[in-house]
Length: 193
Image (cartoon, rainbow, N blue to C red; front, side):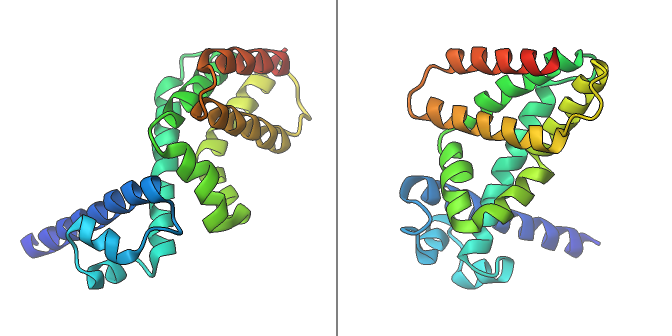
């Protein structure tokens, strides 16, 4: 049992080191300019260990992006406890999304490099499993609370998700986060009314 646990711990430690090193390099240099020898050197791991854990550089990149998406989802979920009214939860969640996307490099990884490297379909699937799922749940609660059945929640979530992403890109480029928070809150208020 001890060997199994130590092997599992070593595996997780190696994967975490690779993901952390890759994240730093992908943020600094971009996916295309980052080589696997650079990643393994930064992680102090052998190249064989990289390919033992990840099929290729793209698979490692996907792991980095998935970890970033999960971090954003956790931030949104922490900001939206169940006791909040649906409308307030949507606003708190959107604010948490903007805050989470302000982590250095996250916008580049999730909104620029991710779609370029992984493609729209794969990024949309990842998004559906993370932040968009949380958004859909919030919209369903807000709209059912306001008795607006029949609203195409999936399409509405796609549109709002795109608006949130655009706001995150604008804030990352130096835009005033408070103005975007205000605009998003206004949009949510109108949808929920």
